[in-house]
Image (tube, rainbow, N blue to C red):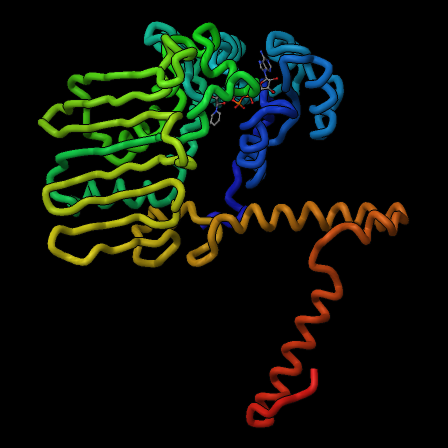
Length: 389
Ligand code: NAD
């Protein structure tokens, strides 16, 4: 179990390229990297707009002289410092991943890059060779692979609990781009622009996520050949696809299928993986991440819950909160601490108007809980008599 004490010897001096104030994924990187204090945010080139990036970096607590106008200056000037950055996360639109990753590796910096890492196998080979030659780590944020139940599935499959693997059905099919929303939404505009995303939209943007889940769960399964049919249901997106079906034949005869879509109207996220063996199947759905469905042919289906003692020890190692609590707990607690801080700040400034406008479980909430318990005990001790509240 991770309780915040499992740390690297010294927090890694870390920077971000992209992930600026208006970005979708920047906060998720910071929240993940900073949670266990294994990383320390010390520098960045956070935005395509240098001024906005600097202002945001300063808001994040980064020293003004370490908020750079662009990634070239970030790598160049950090290299001059004795306390320069050791790692960088790249959360920019896809078209810049290759150049920034290459520059970081050439500067001897570890990289965490958003997917897709780059556009061509040739570029990927270059990055792999550079990372190897410079002995640097490259991580790619296929984020869902970190969920403990993916490890549980991997262990069960490796132990033969499903029998021989026959089929793998994958999908990441949401509905948010069922209409041409890019007309109004900047973050969607670059996603459907071949100059910025290269040869594909949904295959790279969403399909690669469940594909990686299958690689984690089934490391022995190797694709022998595949066929893909793709469509642009919003025709202005052509030649980029907003829907695609990929059928794969694995070595050994198993079959796989990936449905990648941004036009699955009504679907919130729709990332699922179902592994089907000769004896049983496993299914995981990212919208209900705490449950892994285990279905043995001829028996009642079982739902394996995150954090429970019956899981494999490896699947418990990375748990932070134990069974029962949903992971939404982190969000709820973060919101409360945010409001506690606002309240303390308002109180310290003597701003009672602001203080009274902040909603949080305050002393009255604490008081009320105590009174309620006291009255309950009083009633119970009187053989469940009515007591005045
Ligand atoms: P976004 O358009 O919302 O934000 C992009 C950010 O990068 C902005 O702050 C922009 O100012 C900044 N930027 C752009 N070019 C830059 C440059 N050259 N230097 C510095 N900053 C620059 O995009 P987003 O939705 O946050 O996506 C960013 C990346 O994250 C994409 O590659 C996307 O595919 C990926 N993504 C991954 C996941 C996931 O689950 N892993 C989810 C969403 C997005």
